[in-house]
Length: 79
Image (cartoon, rainbow, N blue to C red):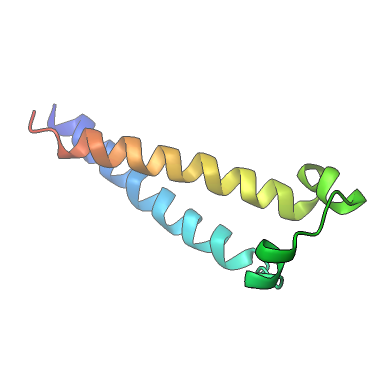
């Protein structure tokens, strides 16, 4: 069991580093509160955002956060 814990810890550290790089590579949201209040409607960019590099970074961020949380929970179990 100790070997599994060491392997998961190494993976956890790697995911942490990759997650930091991916989050820093993303652009900031320039609309801020004005975009939330006024709404921008459906644009070509909002419909096809998942195909862009920014959309792929957001998808990678979601999956890395899920892996981060799952491995953190597993490492917290006292086995």
